[in-house]
Image 1 (cartoon, rainbow, N blue to C red):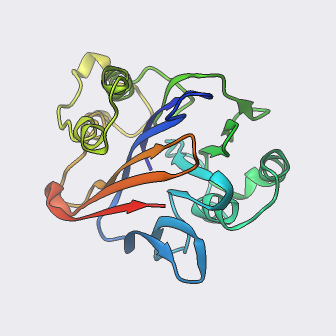
Image 2 (spheres, rainbow, N blue to C red):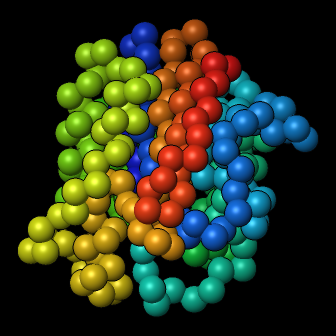
Length: 248
């Protein structure tokens, strides 16, 4: 998952609104959003190479999502980051205890941002930071750096989310995730991957022959605990592969 914009509004009739794009190599096998047969409390997509996921919901109001931290010089990881999301959704460990365990083992993974939520709290942890952060009410964005790092795609998507919060609908959330416009070269970050790659990765929706946005996901959580998810899947050059809608 490479771009997540979200609104956390405790006490609101729709306390959590999420719009997220998962960017990945098209060759990496995965399954779309579904209920997991062996863990029926989980509703999420699935990475078939390592078995984890990038975003999903679980029992008791659990929500989790992940982005990687872009750093071409980091050493190979011993474990897959997607298991951090899957283990939280599958388990019943209290959120803060789970985060404490993740912090203690974060060196086992390549750099990541982790969002974890329940019905009454939402936390963010950046593996390059010292401590997790409990989030106050607000509208936020995550890409492949820290929370709210002002990359052009993050600023654009966060502003678009803010504009639809008066009447958030899954279709509107997916629409804001579909923007293919790249940023001006002068506004690109320098993350060590070269100017051409920075340009490719600077759009909200990424499309190319080998790498791009594989899934766009909209999540609306209601105060009664019900969740509405809509996901669209894509292939090379942004070709539309399918759509899944779930109410859980």
